[in-house]
Image (tube, rainbow, N blue to C red; front, side, top):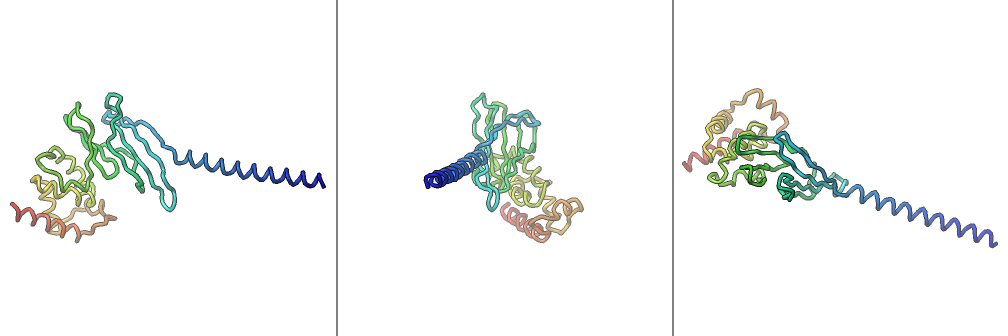
Length: 215
């Protein structure tokens, strides 16, 4: 009887131990899975960025927390951008535009830019371009033009800024669109766009009319 009791006690102890081991392993793996991943990127323009990212959930879709820091800032790692619970995060820092005084990157839905070497990096959300003061942000005209020519989604976000700035090339393209004149390359690039030719035609017409009436 004592032998059976002792055997049962050993079995219970083993079950408890295994259960605790499984729970501890799950907690450790979960912590490792969702811990912050930190790394440094040096771009083609020779800027250094510190990236911190963490997967916050995998169900039903992956979501991320993402932080971007200026690693050029004399060891201070000044934060440029912080995004939380972002789905389908494009982690690439895309070199977008460079001149003697301006360097710009495309990061998710933001433009990250530096105007002068002694200045720090700043950000502007792409869909906020239409609200920018043209006197303060005219230096971003070439950047907006790069975005405008990429696809209709980006064009829809930056076209109004460019029209307000009086950019002739953009205005002429919008006039073509207004007249239902699209070249083969534009149609190919935007084959899967959320905007149809009709959408872009109507948007171009309304935008041109808006600033024609205000001029």
